[in-house]
Image 1 (spheres, rainbow, N blue to C red):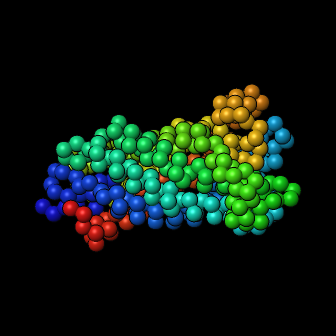
Image 2 (tube, one colour):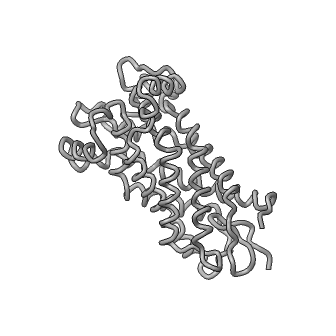
Image 3 (tube, rainbow, N blue to C red):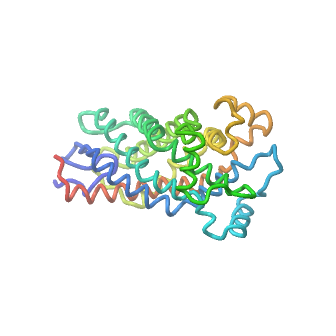
Length: 309
């Protein structure tokens, strides 16, 4: 019996035993998947961030998703929906690379004798991968993105470009300026990946049944990825809102993550913790589905040209 033509989180090997995915393959496949995905989905991230920054304490600037898009295009053109893309593009490649590389590193040590990973252990591996990617890549990347998007709301934007914005932030605030909201980011990203990998592994184990080497059709992978993404959105939306506020231009108003949470609840009510959920849901479902599909297909290709047995 020949091995299956490639797996996702663990590629096929000998009958009855799933092969471990080399972390190096995971890093390459993850980086490519992250770069392609963000170029496709960034406008939804832009709209989500604008709505989260639109505080009820001040007169709301946008009446909803469509109004946000229309105002942005009217004032800045279609390219305005891609403001801040540079920070995410530069960050998404290493972010997803670190995520999958760390996940495979951890999961290879937690799989059973048959090379299988159950859902609870997958949750722990996802949590570990999310915490590492948050500290190494996501926090500075997200802080810069939020500041650039928030800056565009001002009557006189200060940042002329991505690199000018980064240089100005570092000059004025030091490295601390690009590490705002670290606690909220770690909480958000850790829970994000814990939920996503838990759901993804649960669905894959159910789909494969007793055959860990059963090939995954890209369409099935995409559907499972979208479901995992949706679960993470509803599971940690409040953390995402808090993180965004902690990284905006008005972050100095908050003494800590908990103080930010209290201020949002006090002045805007519980619903404020779910601002931007619809555009985030759209973006994340596409994000996770696209990333897992591309990741799987690249790993299959690497298995053919890079032998790691």
